Length: 396
Image (tube, rainbow, N blue to C red; front, top):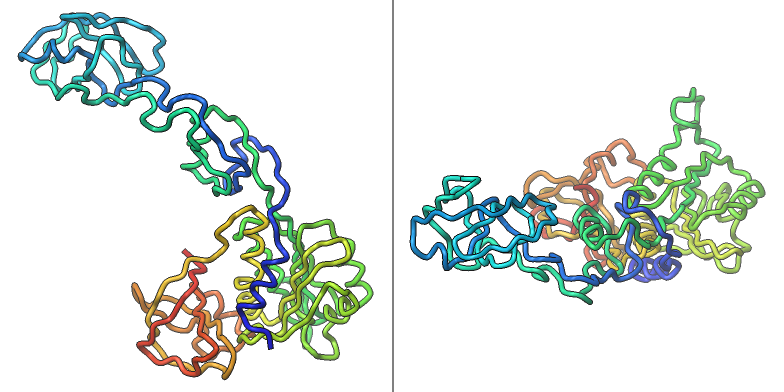
């Protein structure tokens, strides 16, 4: 059997950053920056006030109290360029450029707030409440680096450089295909032997959570030729299937792809998720074939597909955040196989199995409680209460 680590590496090797596109800044949230963005100007571009108050020469407020003439009124955005000379002051708002001659901002709270003259009762040290030009960045500095996931703070930084658009890696477009004659769309009447298709919804949501665009296709009947035609005719960046990859008589995905030279089906030393497949279709599209049991699909996506999608998006860090937690119950693990146990939190650092009635890969109803995946190494055969576990956080 292939180790969990080796199969994860094989899955990741199929992925590379997607081509870049230019998008308006309004559409950049959640995308990954393709190029370094440098500033051509100092940031801030000029000395400006950090407070509402009065721009003064500190020499004029060294003896207090003192009354000064107000020679200008400078709101934020003002283009006026007054000069503060001896015995004068300029009323100034936060963010407004500091006028020539001034070297200190006196907060309005330390004055009588006058508009013709101003009585200064107290004053800060020289240079106080001034934001200096270039304090944030100087020309040539990288302000936002390539590979940055653009969120609110990064988008604000891009906007501060004056960019209305930005070059990013586009989102991966991922086809999600669930297979099985037993599957029917949710809400449809069920006859004996049929179940609602949950996997395509699970995996489509997982694709979107990973930053991709999901194209949900399913359920697809167990028809080898039809499935082969479907898979080879999709115009997407990656394909994820669920079901039909084991050794049963109706394992349609394996049958449809077994003749593809660049697709392999392997047993991975992990529970759940032992039967796996991956590779490239003739047009180069990466395909990941996951087991059909819902917990297996969920765990397999987290370990093998999600990192690949993050790499396609242009991210260097493709790992889930891990934490160390304490097991609050006990369970056995399969000999010689790593285990991916869905867990939920019962305290700040304590977890129990989310599927408390067992670790079966079919237990979809209890999967909704999962907040993490405990990764149990293959050499561990028993988890005892009090053991320290490595847990992948799969929910906030």
